[in-house]
Length: 248
Image 1 (cartoon, rainbow, N blue to C red):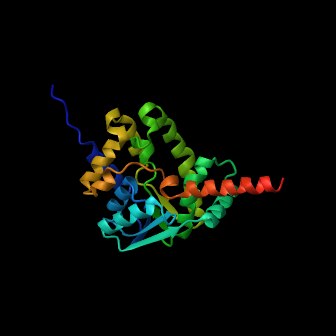
Image 2 (cartoon, helix red, strand yellow):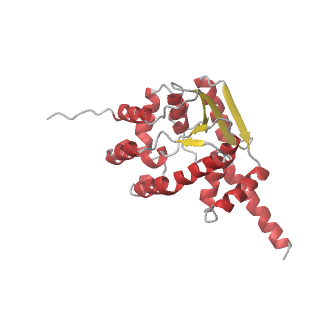
Image 3 (spheres, rainbow, N blue to C red):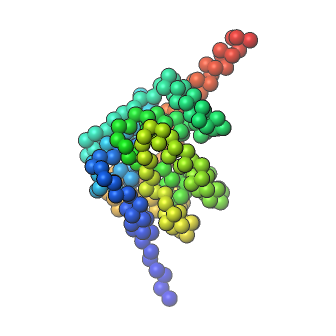
């Protein structure tokens, strides 16, 4: 019996394509970090819609630099940069904690740029690359403990995505995550482990889509670090401690 050569990235491409909704609009938005996942989604939805890209980050952030290059490479005509600073990060943090008082610092660090971004988007329908890391091995911790992936997938579909869809609805927006649906989750869970080592399958999908090599091979940077949000949060925390100590 001969080994069957399965083209997993082709299957993933078809599954994502099937998960791109047919909307009665011409223009949609994408939250673009310039990383592999958001760039894959951008490349694929461009076949269906006129896309306006939005990037959230501090002035010196990696995400802005990377996203600008991606937008230029893919020929995106409308790319809007949303800058963050201590003032709007603190405001977003306060608003998030009003609705979700049990958010951890880690949760806040990646929901803040999302919150700021979605609150500034003009288009009703907003796409993100959310879910790819959990489903296809995007985090370094999975290398030591692959079993954490299933735990994170469960958290993604029961906590994180419902919360982010709720935040989007607050601003009269609809969130779309082409990497996440029942069929793709089942596909992910059925894959051989090597397909999810350092997102091998997503990288090959990027090659199939003719994405820039720098995007495909770029080292993963979590949103809170790539956007500069965590750095600003640390500044806010430091100022809080200083003020607290001085008022004792």
